[in-house]
Image (cartoon, one colour):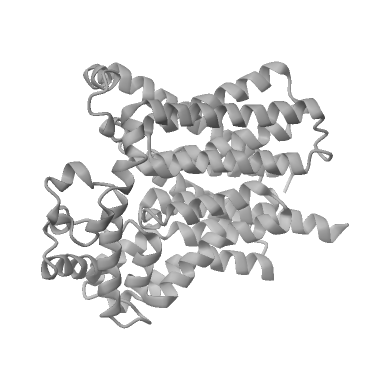
Length: 434
């Protein structure tokens, strides 16, 4: 194959991967791009590089798909199990074609442009929301119904607020990391642009206002600063730059805490609303008008988790309840234990680990943990903080939601971990060639 032709194919290959990442908020377009990507790879990138390490990484990424496939027989309604399995197909395809062609992956190009385009799209959707829904915006500016603002905004482009904010939290980490890494190689204009992007992201995360993402974005930035300060000699950070770096983080954190403390809605959400009624776990019906007092509270989460744990204990711990039978078993338990509020709203676990355990038994939980810990393991070996942060974000976020049961969460995590796996294999290959 001529070099120029190969370069063109590799360029299209990387553009398709980037396109998939940039359209996670638009499911139909993302699905079309995944199909195009697979067809393109079958035609032009079918000569895969497979070794022991790449096979093991691919196996871990595909493990959630394989567990779903393995336990189809444990569902009373096979059609429901097959529909669930379909969502995980990308976890089989991404490692085959991304890791199988790891030598051709332009990691930094994909990751940085994914972050920039995702930010650009979110700003576009935000401006669109302001133009199309001025009545809502007026209400929110007056402090009315602030609890729904982020959810209504994200719902306006067909998404779920916690999902979008989890993306934006890691996008912030990507831009912040490369802002610091490339600081001395960047022009003043580029530095200012990156800072504006970081501030815009933090503002958007506050607007969407999900607690997990707000927590993660500041933890991530703190850990990135710590990483660069520890490696300050390698990155040529002088005393002045270190002071500025610490000052930026302290000011950002102080400003955020001040905002939370001074805005009544934020103050209530992060204190009373989150941690109130802890004595009513499993007894939410004793609260008058629970919809307005405990929806999305920790007490509600614990009540649901307690119920899921109860139905898991009644099942075979090795194989779980099964995909198609899980929801009905949970709702039946709500009825048996007279938890009318939970039954009325058909509330799911909002916890990836306990849901995996209940549906697929011990193997389900182990596969989930291996899948989420993989980026941390690879990042630790490479000393690459972004991989470790992604793993930390997903491990923590899945305590409070089941991101790996949603299409966007599945495709996003599979896409990202496959890229990390390819980057690790490039790193390992360079070490072996020295």
